Image 1 (cartoon, rainbow, N blue to C red):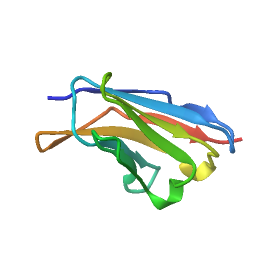
Image 2 (cartoon, one colour):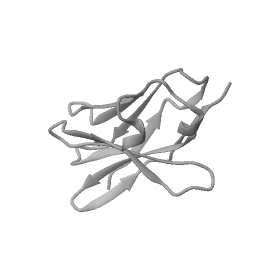
Image 3 (cartoon, rainbow, N blue to C red):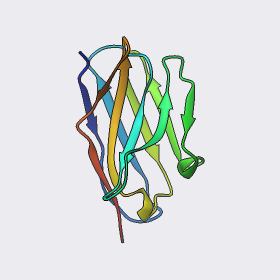
Image 4 (cartoon, rainbow, N blue to C red):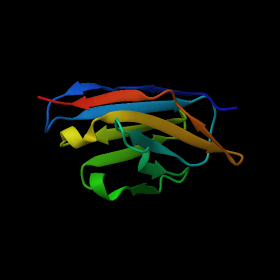
Amino acid sequence: QVQLVESGGGLVRPGGSLRLSCRASRSTADMGWYRQAPGKQRELVATIDRYEIDDYADPIKGRFIISRDNTRNTITLQMNFLTPDDTAVYYCYAEHLGHRYWGQGTQVTVSS
């Protein structure tokens, strides 16, 4: 079992920045973030493996940066130049021994 604890969501104005963090209860393989906006399917945002190889969905390339601290079993998503289209619940995930575990989700709202 892997427990994930997320933090850092909130309300921000368009063009602003937010930083999300997710801490796992143990070391894991791939980790990353998905998001789900109201009325839409959950979509991949960014992933990072234990070697810190990262990948991003096209809508957020150049704006978001995912990073990882293996010593603390933590990943961070730095979100810049936020737009209202980024409004969603953001979910952290981690993969361990073939299973995917999810965090509880953190709300990000971009609004003026």
